[in-house]
Length: 418
Image 1 (spheres, rainbow, N blue to C red):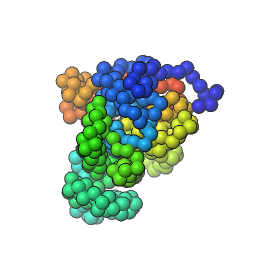
Image 2: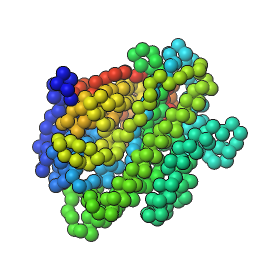
Image 3: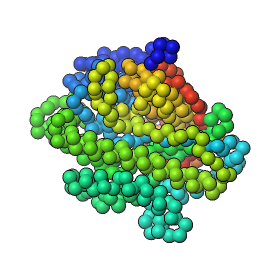
Image 4: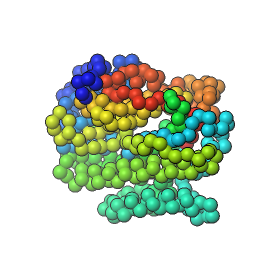
């Protein structure tokens, strides 16, 4: 961070075991379970400097979501998670608010036809029909960059093929598909009434399988070597071992798949938009970034492995995306390169309710009111993704004022979820 860019430090420090936890949570609630998970990580001997917790931090499976972890010569597969390479893509178009119809329902339905959502995937017979050649070509172009390496991975790890069942066909059919949960496709307006396309997704089924496969390997390796851990989900793979090398190789593929999955969906969304909207161009190059991944980086003068689980790289000048909930604002940000956060920021608002709690506490009427003005599903199936299940995005942004600066503020007009 340049001297002129510095702002007041926003983190609090919590005492850990071997290292401390630095938390950018000044204006947001943090559940006790998340603190417990973070403290567990600090007892691992290969954790470097400290653990950084972003303002969207909350309890996660395996390890805390909203965590940045620097390690020396070891990686924790469960700290990356099973949605390897999950992230965001956003681009600005030449369209203005006045170019959009008052009723966006037809466009939402068109996008849902072009991009499979939830458990759906591309249907091969349908892709071979007249009128779908463009979709097939988009998939084929991206798949050429992925299939050879996937063949090598499944040859080396037959269990991946067994877990997936025709893994190559499954990965191909899921390329350019959204998935469920908190994944979404949105059209938004910025402060200048420019229309943006923004979407959130990851490496789909194959990434999940790769994650589960190596989490199991790490746990069995700990047991075989009688290594005691605070929690079995903190099982790790040591650098210099075949398991470590195999994991990094597989994660690299899953991260590339996730990136290309977002690229593919963006192309399909643009095609859907051309059928309902005036002619337009892309006026700002797409920002395509992961927020569940590993990266080899230099911090505090040393080479380390950075694991970001629910966190985004925010190197000085680097553009990123921080989405709010489906009824709130989202932000295009510029990183301030804060070394204490390992040059990172939050990946979104972060949950304040579990999915089960949201389903108990939020009504359909609540959801309809919270998403007023947004063209989206307003049924019972969306309650666990309703805005009140998430932290206040303004409080999240205020908590990380020394990590990023806002470049654009986006407001959702249309939201597609699985």
